[in-house]
Length: 454
Image (cartoon, rainbow, N blue to C red; front, top):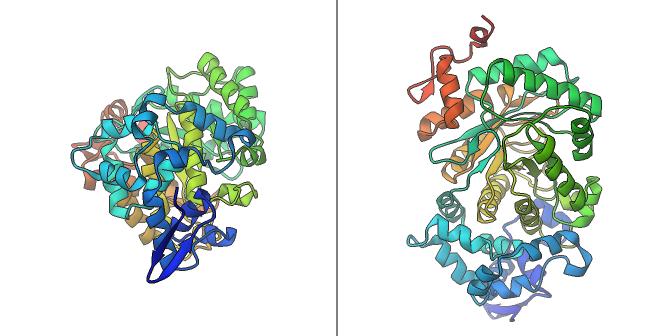
């Protein structure tokens, strides 16, 4: 294993595989903050050269956090498909990149290979790709999952309807939800971030969403994004919801900062299979975001793309229905501007897909980032082409509870029409019944949810 190379008569030597991965990353403000980023463009190129010659085995044998010290590492390593790994272990990451981008390599072949790759290997190959490479390769992989309905079918762009309210007011949530439904949002999930994380508030919002779903016979899923332990207790008390949510991280220490353990996630998964209201079999909803580990000093001097990939290695163990990278929510300390945001989102969707996950993206930014809605819309268009499974539907693209900017109901409608994509089949039929959707686009009653009230 060689960890050095010479460029323009200068030798660049790296201390470890982890150091190579970090230095090969495209520039992110979070990696600079962590002190792991390349100090120059030439050093970044040198790291990419070294990385391209490392093998899948090299990455397997050098996880970012040692196996014996981290439960997430153990989960990822133990889940590797031994037969797939044996076929690939001698392959260099440069060769793997060429194979993934070959027109002869199908999405099915890529997904089979992904089962033999650790999260570090998947992170590594993404660092050798340009943005168009990530879009092309990511779009080839077709991943489906089923809760009440099935996400990921050909030609589908789904949407999480996010009718958050700053005081969890029931009427406010219902009004936002009805408006979103009338614009075609909500087929991925009706998902509310509660203003307060209590059992009573979770039960209350669950009831609002379930009543709405049942009253209008909406073919979709419901979820309240409170802490996993809150949801488990609410379920035990007789509440009803389809999906169990939790934010996850790429190290055991970072998970602990969220108040989460792997046994806790296993317990929640089993409980929602047994007592949740979904048909299944996929009943988990995970959210991630590059550099969340750095924010809790639990990144182990690892770059943020690799730690994010480890989130996906964790997620695939639980066969989730949805995984959502909330790509710009962490702010400019970690992803500074639209260029870094675009790169991060394309990395996340590709890396999630190669892990075999149904990936969505909250195309978003905080108000202190040097970005605007035009940047957001341009990224959303790229993600549609990258095969992103779902995006957010937020009233006017402005979340009044979480105080950040995302994609609005009109954005998703326009993206579907431009790309010739459509909602999940059963949901599209429901929209058509009410005149919200006609002939592949918004219909005569779009935006007029009063037709539901008649």
